[in-house]
Image 1: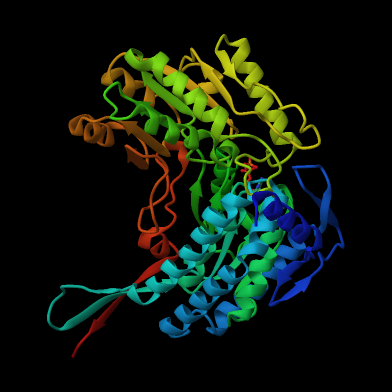
Image 2 (image 1 turned 135 degrees about the vertical axis):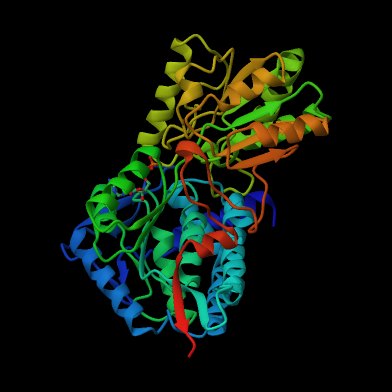
Length: 500
Ligand code: ADP
């Protein structure tokens, strides 16, 4: 098939898709108790995709009760580890078998290019369930070195009902990062997807049952943050909230925990990550390619986006030229269902306005907009923003301090390594950081000095399931992926047995 034919294929498939907009509670679809619904909108053209049940505190109560019933029955929590593993591995196979459906749903629900869904989101979500499933029988307790007439050991057990509150930028993948370890550890889950991207979670819940997951173990309550999300985070029978989203709401999660049952809270709250280009970088073309991917990939709606690009003055002009070319040729907004499209719209019109407002703030502050800076013409039906580059940015400017969550790169010049690190760390965030240099000493000094949870040397946003994902400072306190993530959904129990 030619690219045009493939685009036509996806458009026809998407047209024919039937969406399930109800909640998923206790193993079955259910409308919200109130009967309320909200519309899910395709941000590429403003069309209504589906009516989605608008869950509220009553629905959260039902979902948590169902999760707790399943948990207390032991049907999942006490299932022999390898059986639980088999369910998660079948679940991964089913997600893979439905790759096209997931790709279309998230693409038309939140706007990301279908090519990204097929090459990034879906395969990484499948990998997440496989990796986490395979970890299940590797979780071990320990035996203490106590006196000979004592046997003291530490058990690891699930927490109970876990609430997962996820964002819209990678609807399927961020959900996988939360629910896979929560389920693998034997917990029941109540998932609250973002209201901007509610649809793939419901398919996920149905497939969990098809994979042999017991009813009540994975529940989905769609709805708005201050209604369904808040009710979940305040619920006295929820033992943990696993959250990814903004700093503002992440902080609220901790408040809700204190106001209710002191539930555990893990947060992943975005960033303003520095991506440093030293003059001795081996290949500026490669560095610019990755720097462009780091801020324009997924429309810049990425928590670990390298949104502050720090460039050594000696190579500033040369780098900026190459970087602008990479942005212009590599990231062209268009129909996200077309497999040749590299950049979709913002998730919705309000996010588009928010990003355009930041661009205005940057211009007013005196930064130089050398590319984009507006909504691209010809795409007015959608919530598009053109890839935008600012040069002459000072790290004190709002566009260098606040997370924009859009395709806006701020280029900041520096003289030497010391200044680069100072600027890199001059932020309230600490999620990711990158450096391009051919000097091993500089590279590892940076890895030591930078205040970030993830550091990339001569690459950006790489990693695999063993690589802990999470931040320092106000980027949050949790870690996704990796074995530690799975352990964070367990609790220890110390047992002291006297041997007579
Ligand atoms: P963004 O600004 O990227 O949309 P948010 O932090 O607002 O990120 O949203 C992330 C998730 O948190 C979404 O699922 C959203 O519905 C939820 N959320 C928003 N506000 C609240 C709240 N007050 N209580 C609980 N969840 C919330």
